Image (tube, rainbow, N blue to C red; front, side, top):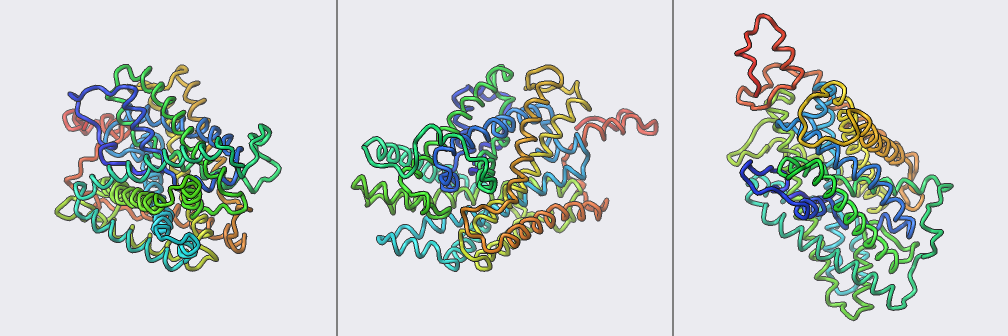
Length: 509
């Protein structure tokens, strides 16, 4: 999951220049690509290629195409809340929106852990750097300090962090990715012995080792976020043809970047030495040392930290703003709807910051930084996949309940078959990854496996129950009279069938 600049989430006006294939491709690549999780897949060596392609077919492409149809068919304010609500009603819609907000909250400690490790590697002594990056209290201090700073920046509004997000993405993701891939493959082609077996037989994973698949499930989160750009499908000439072509090209480019970046790490770092939080920085250090460019190592470490911090600053406000819209529509008490002079949801942001603080303490409780990193990463995947499964199910249901609803983009394949194939593949892939995410990984010491699974199950149940409890307590006075949230299509239909309500009072929003 990469950072989204505010500009990628706002549709241009109707008079704007139409988007071309190249622009769409770039937008989607930037929205998805992040280097933070590459070491987890370097564990698999050459077989990581299989997992990347599998996740692209059963997740990346279905998310992109399904979100495009939903965004053009139901473009009113609300996003995934709107889409799921149209299909299954407001209760499950609130669950989907809450999962989106919570998974981002859980994601922050893992993302900032990578930022803390990057900062640790700006020193001149790699041995000392690695020891500092493994220090739980150092990581916890950096995570909390930067997150609370990002929260207070978000209080200042979009303008306060828009430029940081834009340039942070370029400096901290795109440039380091190019350097990683170029040096990694230069290392291989120069005749150096790679640390992985490059025989063709290694492309197919060893499915007899069932518990190894759990790390592969995290690849699904790598591809998360493509739905954020689906709204732009309305700004494309001939979307039924142009949009899927752009998605295919973006998917190929995204998979290529992830595959080559993962292999670059696997070429240099021995399998037994791969560390989820450190290996990317160690790979850069080893590559720079081999190339005689050791002076670049701390510069890249700083750049990676900038990229992570810029992404976090951007995401602090995004989902919280979405939850604010739902709150004002009457789904959260008035306390949650409080905004400051910049229009930012201050109370929601403070609750989010408090949750991040509590989750970050896991870094101290669990046996190592790496085990805490893994458990929070898996919880992020689990919560996000709940939202995605609801989205895929909603898309299929809406082909039955609202078949004649105009859609600027329509997944090809007839009235139902195409959606069942694409949406069904996405739902099946998400469900498979969801189940695998609860299996303790054999590669990482997570303390007691029972404790690992218990924490994941307990936190998942806890976060799923919360929105149902809130919905059960819902009161009419929670709704803000000034809220501009349009009613669901089925709500409008019910209103128009009431004889006591004249047509003039049921105009669409």
